[in-house]
Length: 107
Image (cartoon, rainbow, N blue to C red; front, side):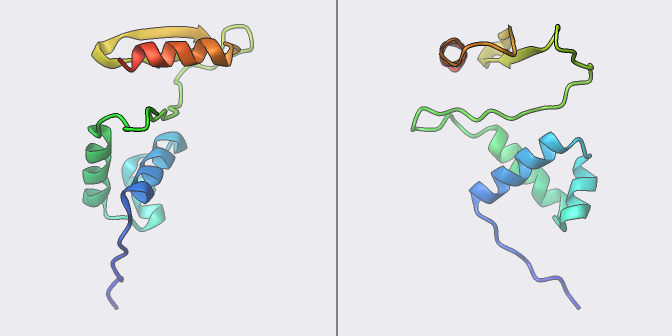
């Protein structure tokens, strides 16, 4: 019996791509676990990565696992902006300061 093709919206693909990025699983493993075509997943991942900033002023934040172990004293937040600009901030940064940093990095 053939598998029935499921049509997903752009928002559904964005959710899947973000879930895979935060899962710690390989793309291949994630696709197998969720019954997704590997090539289709890669297509959407590339398409969403190159998506222009949202017209409503919000930018997507995608959590990524760190390869370092983080203790309470050295927990840091790394923000990457356009043009390769990186800013490191403490995890207990105030929401107002974080908003200013994100705004500056999204320009």
